[in-house]
Image 1 (cartoon, helix red, strand yellow):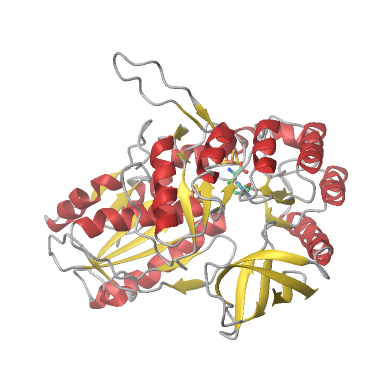
Image 2 (cartoon, protein in one colour; image 1 turned 120 degrees about the horizontal axis):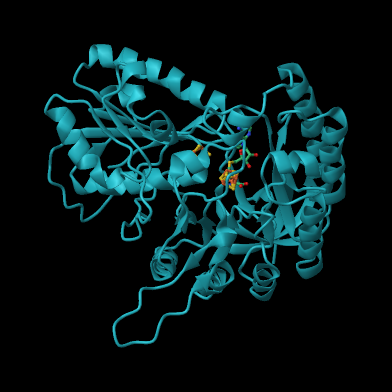
Amino acid sequence: MLDFAHTTKEHDETRQGEALLIENNVSKGNGRKLYIESYGCQMNFSDSEIVASILLETGFETTKNYQEADVVFINTCSIRENAEQRVRNRLKEFEFAKKSNPGMIVGVLGCMAERLKAKFLEEEKLVDVVVGPDAYRDLPNLISQVDDGNRSVNVLLSREETYADISPVRLNSNGITAFISIMRGCDNMCSFCVVPFTRGRERSRDAASIVKEAHDLFNSGYREVTLLGQNVDSYKYTAPTIEGQEASTPVNFANLLALVAEVNPLLRVRFSTSHPKDITDEVLHTMASYDNICKYIHLPVQSGNSRVLELMNRTYDRDWYINRIDAINRIIPGCGISTDIITGFCTETEEEHQDTVSMMDYVKYDYAFMFAYSERPGTLAAKRYADDIPEEIKKSRLTEIVAKQRAHSFERLQQFVGKNQRVLIEGFSKRSDKDFAGRNDQNAMAIFPVDERYQAGDYVTVMIESCTSATLLGKIVD
Ligand code: SAH
Ligand code: SF4
Ligand code: F3S
């Protein structure tokens, strides 16, 4: 049995995992119990599924109760200071548990492990193992080092590791939607961002293994896959040439999207994240030409002001970003668009902040993730620029854009009211098992009464009757 608790980037709540029965488990039978908890972006959640797969092979049983675990792993995020603080607080709770269970092994995985390396062992006395995102294959060995009385660290980053051959154990799964990691690392150097330091160089995963994973998921009943990478538009994979055969053709992101879309017309394809500098018209045309590629793009703008974008080293300016938005609206009319925004980046003036506000008015995003700038040690911005915008100004700018986004989200959802939407049923709504929940093509969540003729994994037509600023409400029509 595998049970897991996860925490998402945007929502602090910890969700308890669904129990998942693994059949044909070749257990080496050490019978110990593992608990794993994830923070940060979807890449981290996806990595925890790889970690689970690796440890399942060595015979770990898992538990959703960390107090009874022999090994407790926390898969961490470094993106903002408060993400790290949350992990430190959680470690305090583990420290308390360790007092009554001194044999408990505590491991820190992921981005904070990579950022702090062996320093973690000095700073947090309870931590026994520190493992970076490219070293998970070494976990069984690292755990046995701890068994031998040592504390162990492996934070080597790799230029090749993509875990392509590892079949992730699906955690917290609804059995309908799944993530597929298509690349790792990031070669961009956005000046505010810690990811290139914690995740290493960008590398793309073997296209054939991605398509196979999508096939396998479809055959197990899944109906939606989200292709994951920090910058999916720079995906590029060339299969090694076999001696005596013609060189293989490189697969770019547009090609990969088409390959995955062709797995089955009933398999929805989504992806995240696109970078404004790299998203091509070719990708947009591919999206337009497949009904099962969802019409939704997450295109982080960060700021609407060209000077700030330059300081951020985003390598596009306001006009370029607007050009990409116009291309999306031209090639895929009605496409859903969401974004990420940072307020109060170094030296940002009130006037420059207003450029972000006016960008929001121009695009009318369906959804936005919004953050106050948080200086991260070691980043270009930390080295070059003073973090000089007072916290209360960062926060008041944030409050302003959050209010604007709420109004825009409501307005964008209202466009669907009175219309029929094709929705993939993902399961029951969180609040009641009398309602189904599922998303439309543009990623808007719809809630509608259960109709016994249908179940999770079915596509239904929902007549949208009303909406809140976050959800569509309606009923199934034939
Ligand atoms: N690869 C994605 C972003 C990954 S991080 C991209 O390029 O868009 C997710 C978001 O966190 C970023 O888009 C940014 O808005 C935010 N973020 C990253 N570093 C941050 C920092 N130091 N302070 C505040 N927000 C930050
Ligand atoms: Fe960070 Fe920029 Fe890479 Fe995104 S593209 S992960 S923001 S460095
Ligand atoms: Fe956080 Fe690492 Fe993702 S820093 S946002 S978990 S890549």
